[in-house]
Amino acid sequence: EERIEKLDKKMEELEFTKIRPSSLPVVLLTGETGTGKTLIAKYLAGSSQIRRFHRIAMPEFESSEHMFEYEVFGFRGGSYSDAPDCGDSGALLNYIAGVVFLDEIGDASKQTQRKLLAYLDDYKVRPRGIHDSIFCPTMVVAATNHNLDEDIATGNFRRDLYERFDVRIRVPSLNDRKPDFDFILDSVLQNPGINPEHWVKE
Image 1 (cartoon, one colour):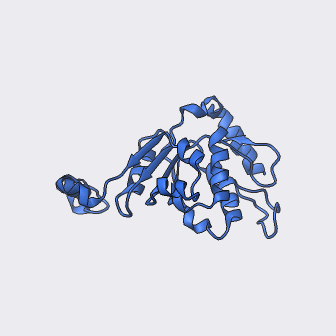
Image 2 (cartoon, rainbow, N blue to C red; image 1 turned 60 degrees about the vertical axis):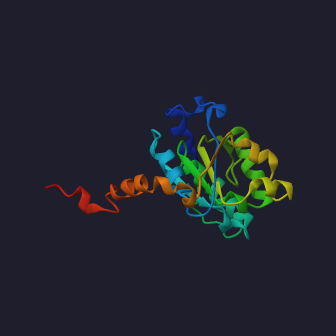
Image 3 (tube, one colour; image 1 turned 120 degrees about the vertical axis):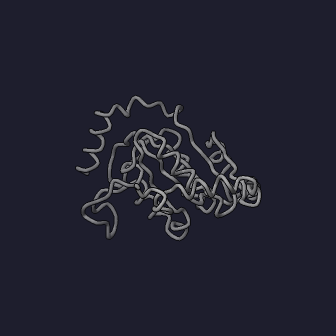
């Protein structure tokens, strides 16, 4: 709880309370597996002033919706059975003003979708065991290889959550980007982590 209070105070000092939720883009990346959706999310984080990025793999919570609540929204120590005494602020508070990347959001359960929708309504979180909600603005970027139009039609994905994504980007498959391969390879080879010899000073 003390850690959460410190975060709340830090937010006030950085004037996060002046951020208007309506000004925050909510981004959805769709496309086949391996098209580079994670790279785009990281690019968005790198282009921000805060440069903070956290990936949340939604399939990990398919069999444990409660763990999604604890790990994403946080909890006070001892607030549930076997809860660590130290508690946890949760991913949203820990990465405030950064990019929170919800990978494979198409696999999110109905309950998880409801919780995400509630967060996007006012960008407030209330860690388990804490009475007051905390304004916690982040840039939410989600990705999926599902056809969400079909999932909405079958009732597997909430239309109101889908409509909250005001920026929707379809990432084309590699087969559709063959004319761009020269540019892609050139960009990759200039990455010092992949091609360190390119950056050796003579």
